[in-house]
Image (cartoon, rainbow, N blue to C red):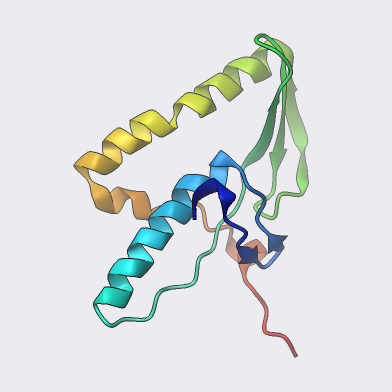
Length: 122
C-alpha cells in the first residue's frame, strides 16, 4: 500500500509515486474496515494529474497528464515548475492535517473516469 503499491488500473499498473501513495494507503485502510464489517472491499480507481521532476533546487519539469498518465500538451519548465513541484511536495502535510480532523475526507481522490476502468478479459 502507499507509494510502493503495484495496483492494476485500466491503463496498466500504477507506478510508485507519492501522487498515488495517499489514495492507495487510504483505500487499504477503508478496505480493512469494510472487511471487518463483513462487506466486500470496493475496487480502487485512480487517475494521475502530472509527472513532476526536480532538476535541482531552482529547476524542474512538470508534464501534465491525462488520468492514464499519457502526456497532455501543457508542461511547465524552469523556476515556475520548481515552485509548482515544491508546492505539490508540501501538500501532503495540510492533507494529513485535514484527514486527522475529518478522516472521511481522505476517501476522495481523482478516480480518472473511463481511463481507469478495468475491462473484463474476454
